[in-house]
Image (cartoon, rainbow, N blue to C red; front, side, top):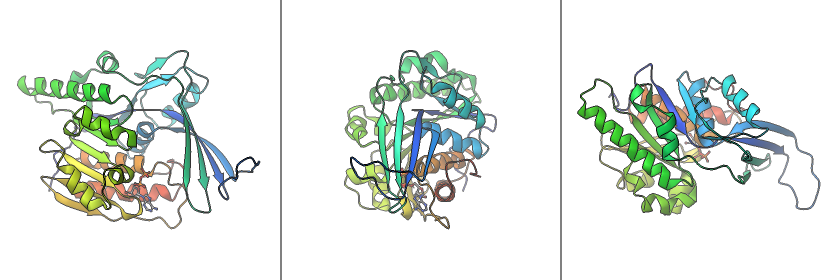
Length: 317
Ligand code: ADP
């Protein structure tokens, strides 16, 4: 069955969220406090959920833009070079002078495969509705899908989602042949949970991605009951998608009912950092190509499983 989230071939997906620098420290085992340790490897990567997902869509052949605030710090050139390397457009980002670039120091423990993230964001402001209105022309027809990484600017994100809705309404009333812009939102950071309720955000996006930890915080113990239970909170016609690590993913929509995909484990786990971002990107890519919900989460699991078997994103296909 054809899905109803397809965008035009010449349209792009816009990812809204954070870009930061990830410093990945690969270690034989977890470090002991107050001791010096040698790492197996240390890799600098462009990071941030929305920024990672942009990379993955581009590698899958999609046209993509990242939109967020960008610190005018010494790390800026590293970030911009990397966006260019992966053919992710970023030129409309809001560059903020006199701010420090957010940094994530990640400890990757080879013994247990655990990922410990130490994130610092001292003063980079979050994106506001006015930035979107100033920088992105939603009427141009260029943007077909806008994905939001759920962050601390929940109130502004709610305003942005409502603004896109209004633009879509205008499009429909002007009987233009252009399709409405599809929206999606990722709920991963646990502190977002009360804010989704406060700003009535469950009912705003067309597609809602909920992470395993987020669903667990809300009391769900498996992906099927999370997809079914949380689907009730969405607006009519919306899709709930829930990735669940090595279990795979589940989704629920009026059209598909409850659907699941198993995970696709690689021969050996190399790097699970960004598995969720990869899953979101690949699932959006498939939905935006007109695939149905089950095929889309299956594609998401395949690409995310492949990603777990390689370092970074470079060879994703
Ligand atoms: P996050 O990176 O947000 O913790 P998850 O751990 O839920 O994300 O993983 C997202 C997707 O990545 C899963 O749905 C699954 O398809 C894939 N994945 C994650 N871990 C593994 C694994 N160990 N083996 C195979 N696939 C995995």
